Length: 487
Ligand code: NAD
Image (cartoon, rainbow, N blue to C red; front, side, top):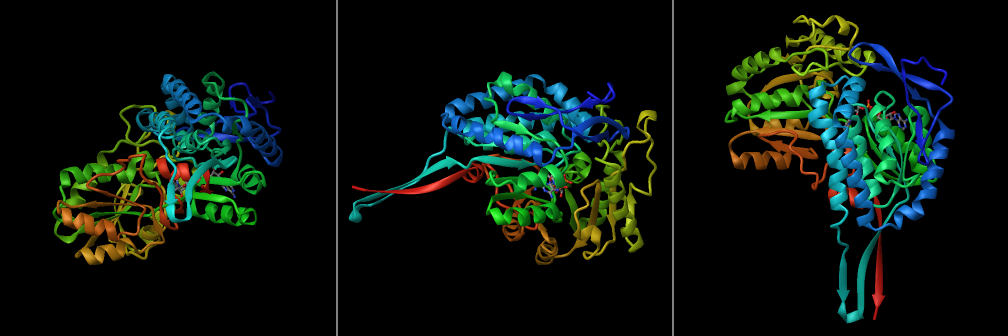
């Protein structure tokens, strides 16, 4: 290969084989700022080959029983789990996240995604109704859609990609996946295990490359009737436009501007450490992260004092150090963007309580060029500020006061997004009441990120269209037909 030997060079995975590409993109290690990997810069040609392979594999794969498919998914889960440490190391290096997060969240969840859908596919039933007076029975039948196009972001690379691959193939579809060009390594590692798992060639195809070239070629391909996308709202708008002429089935999981609402009867001993995690876990690069904290006036001062003190204890540094709480942000450009929000807040007269521009960050010698910043808390900021309205997607959270339940619901709903919210109170009636009125696809009360994969996941407003989960993914990745039998 025409690349320097010390660089990791990825290849597309098409029809069960690794295939080199004619051009490559640099991929950076966010904790050092060095190029360490070359990612195929695929385009129409590569996507065409992958779609053809997926189309060819569809008749055989879709006619397998759910049980046969389930066995292969479980085997793949076992193989990833066997290599968990290697996957975690790769994810941490590629994305900048801490090794601890990759070991305990990303890779275990990728394994679980396969196990979960291997099991859930065995338990679906279809509907049946009877019209005795007409002598008719009606029932529904579900069949896989065909070639599914799966496009995923960089923040939880293998976790979110497998959350799409597992249900798509469990339902009998074949797939062409396009991971983020910034975090492609673990998807490539997964491809190496497919043969051993018994996956027939062409069922899973992965093309690497940018969104504008490879992603758009997939979205526009006439033989891909379904697109499952997780990423930004802006990209989703483009995908919707491009796929509209083909009337494609779309699932869009998008950005958020998630509120935490903390009432004065909240248990702060639980609320503070959880809100710290919900604000800064994975460098704040989770679509479900809290970025607006509304605190009732009576406990505002105490909350802020304790929250800032805990934030200052968070250790930022080399992601492979297991004592570190926060690693590097994904890219230099993203780091600059996140920092620019803090600058804007300051210029508007807000107060930066800790972090960016206030405290100093000491980094190990090898990480001086990495994309690091301190977790940052902003106060005295107006609801209309861009920091309170736009998704920052980094370790920055705003904390503001409120007085009444009515007021906070209105303010929490006053953004274009509606993905996730948390509500903290010991009043059971109140948490139900507030949860029902929040414009949000998910509401956690007195906790955060506790997920039952059986139940729907997704957002409202600019946070997305469609839901994913056991039943929802089954419905999305299959077509339903109503059949009437007259007897
Ligand atoms: P992004 O929209 O820039 O990219 C996501 C994916 O889409 C990448 O693979 C990218 O290459 C591809 N892409 C870009 N332009 C494309 C185009 N024109 N056609 C087809 N594909 C294209 O998002 P990102 O920066 O990678 O990820 C961060 C965003 O993802 C944030 O907004 C975050 O909130 C969101 N996100 C949402 C969820 C959720 O479940 N709701 C989960 C994680 C991340």
